[in-house]
Length: 419
Image (tube, rainbow, N blue to C red; front, side):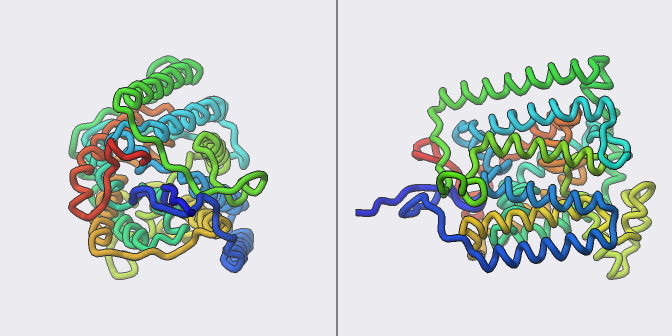
């Protein structure tokens, strides 16, 4: 007699799904070959037309996408599980990721280590109305749109059809946000950027100690809440055993957390800034708008250092190259696990993706980044705005728990056996 087991789905939206086994499907060899072919062609093109750093970043992006998919390393689902039923397992993996990241970022930022002789700088952004509003609406948007910025990219790589809708409206939202950004940053109150390392006198060593203590405190609080609420456990992932697990099985969250931190540090040393995602969306949307006659070059967002990006190929933009790498890496990971499959779009998840994508895009521009650029990159750079982003995104997540059922999206329940 066959029994069904509840396992995590490919995407970050649904409840765990029933499968007859937790074993993986056979590898989708034709898709793997196609993905490798596309990656090889893109590598050759970048080598022929761009600085070598762009090719390195493509490789880092491939590894980021592979890691995200193999562990289903989510920010949307982590926030939702914690705010709905108190399951903090994924939140603790965030703290591990951040702990490794600050440990690597501290000497890189302090001494300016880089691979190609460029200067390095972290993401340290102002704290003001734009940050508060932007991170809050991003938290709402990611719970409706089916994933955060990184989740959108890796879900597209995994074949989740509705995420193409999320991405489209993510791009629209962030382009509108770029147009409106001077109002939010120049006309409304804000403090100067605050770094725990350089604005406080702590230095990078002191800021590292404070950061590690904060991560430990947050992890401890999640354990207390989880025990008090008797939170359901996370559902397992389809997997395999032995060495094959490296290439096509699920990875533990702690392994992915360490890998993502290391890859973010490599990104910092390769291009001079940490991993980011949504600035590329603003670039893509603005270029499309310019094609249709919109004078985007006159926008405040595209003045100064950003102006050259509008005139260059998108392949000269390091964030674009990273994004393409993440999608391709997730595609290869999903095909290796036999999991790539286009999914059904319903009226509910369509409209949720439209609203969620717009909110995430607009919120990311106001908040100086998304879950990667602001939360991960900001905290790893010792910026106070990264912590505030996380708190406000959690508040947005809590609010969105009451909106998700309106679109037919699920919310974990305390009496679930797994979530």
